[in-house]
Amino acid sequence: MSDKDYKFNTRAVRAGQVRTPEGEHSEPIFTTSSYVFNSAAEAAARFSGDEPGNIYSRFTNPTVRTFEQRLAALEGGERCVATASGMAAILATCLGLLKAGDHIVASQSIFGTTTVMFSQHLAKFGVETTFVALTDEKAWQDAIQDNTVFLFLETPSNPLGEVADIRSLAAIAHERDCLLVVDNCLCTPALQRPLELGADIVIHSATKFLDGQGRCMGGAVVGSEELVGKDIYGVVRTCGPSMSPFNAWTFLKGLETLSVRMKAHCENAQQLAEWLQAQPAVSQVYFPGLKTHPQYDIAQSQQSAPGAVLSFELNGGKDDAWTLVDATELVSITANLGDTKTTITHPATTTHGRLTPEQRQEAGISDGLIRVAVGLEDIEDLKADFQRGLAKLT
Image (cartoon, rainbow, N blue to C red; front, side, top):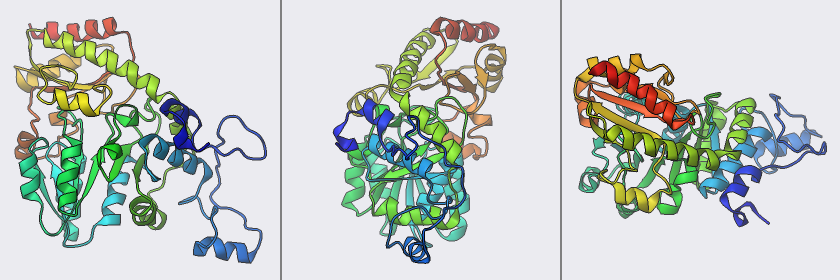
């Protein structure tokens, strides 16, 4: 049976593994930079592409390949290319698909560093980006130009949890011969599979929920053999933003428990969001699992659960936000997310701190906003910790 014949949890544990003659049960880590050929002819055939096989670990490593095949099986893609980080995955996608004079339409609600990459670094090489509101489909339509190559978005967005209708945006993109690229970092394929909804490419920061314990850096691009296996793989092969074998092995272990972890993350996040919503000092909670969320119905239609990242607004601006953050004792003050440990951060001065005030305003990042990536601690302990912070405000 092929990987696609099995259900999700089986693929998460088994897909991509090819046992060596040693008969190992757990996937091995191939810590080697190069590989030995049986003859000069075999070496020539490998380098020319006439014969498959390992050449050099910058772009062919068995442990990395196992991770790539497993994640592709979970996302429903033909090919996955692993990278050194989530940002490297986005950069490899851009280098593989774009040239000077091309155009991107991107959500205003993407990760702050991605905004900087598009607006500053790609701009130096003649690639223009137009930013639009994530949920304004007319704005997406109007922003597409004759030279637009792809539409880029995160859904749910970080940190406000806005949800885009992937099916609708895929239709808009394809009508104008554009690609749809979706960052699926917050949901993972355990909760959402954008390729099944019409997207062409899925981006991951494996550093986050795919690992699940904050141990390693890595990224991945998933899609068709033509786009990912040719254009984007070519960038990784030549330019070298490669995933290390050890990190790939760590992510493989993370994928084995992905579905179980995401279910527990989401249950905790739902309870914390509902509790925060009832606190007088909190003016608004942003979380797709709340029925008051403006895209609640869309989230219900394309996600199996709301995710584990929420944010909330305090009336007192930056002073209140910093007071609450500093008063917590259990949660970790860090900008990372996707960990078993709950993390808290102030986006306006961390993850989105490099944006201009105008860009932050357009993205809805206020000075009173706090983001929480909910972990796997006991929910009552989490509530008590946030209550410590809220008590400081009164």
